[in-house]
Image 1: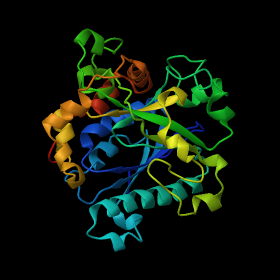
Image 2: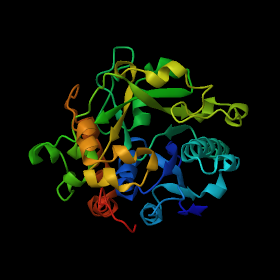
Image 3: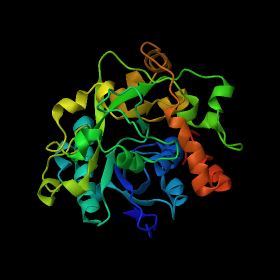
Image 4: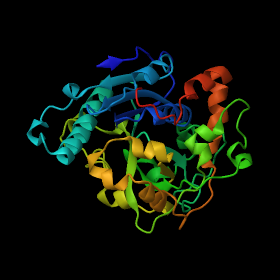
Length: 330
């Protein structure tokens, strides 16, 4: 596997993540910067789909010294999926389960692993200010990362008695805001229109709940559970995440997973035979331009000033320069 040769040398607590990518280079820069800031993401294992026309290695190299990234190919984790050869959908699902299983085993061996996020590169974890009283974040400052919020709000997730922290997932519309709103509270020198989390400000609660995502506290999960073949996309470890929570409504989730479509060019770029009929311009605007149930939210906006404070303006600009730029050869 490819490794970007970074180590976490201090004793800070951090998040890890297990992910699959396919031709997502335009999404990676913003995803890494945002979650480096808000999740304190410092460890990442990424499996690259063999059908990818692009490689994220160049982007990952820019994060040396900031995030420890390991990049896998199918041979590193996909043992047992050969029986699905020729069936794209079953192979894809097997790849996801095997990646979560192998990644979880690797992270469990690493002494400092605690929280692990199971999300996609077009998804962002944000505080949920719509949550009901039992699930609402009551103590908060804009400079807090998610681990600070956990510490300041011990009532969340059933007093943190459980290893699985489920999150409702909702789409963000592609409705454009005027520049004065997009650039609000953005440090001078940062191109806010290139960042989805600043450009698209209208999430949408759908009539039917989408299957959610989850964060897991590996310090609460024993090895025998990690080693079981018990993994799923929306319930990463099924014995730890309740089935009912997959379809939880947004009012019972302290954090939300915002799902961004990005630009039309980004939406149509990936060659995915499962979704060819759903990659048209018509479908893009019907699905992500629909404002029914939408609401204005700047919850993700805080991250950019915090990110610049952490790494400095020049490095921030360098790390974000390819955000949402679609390149055929990346």
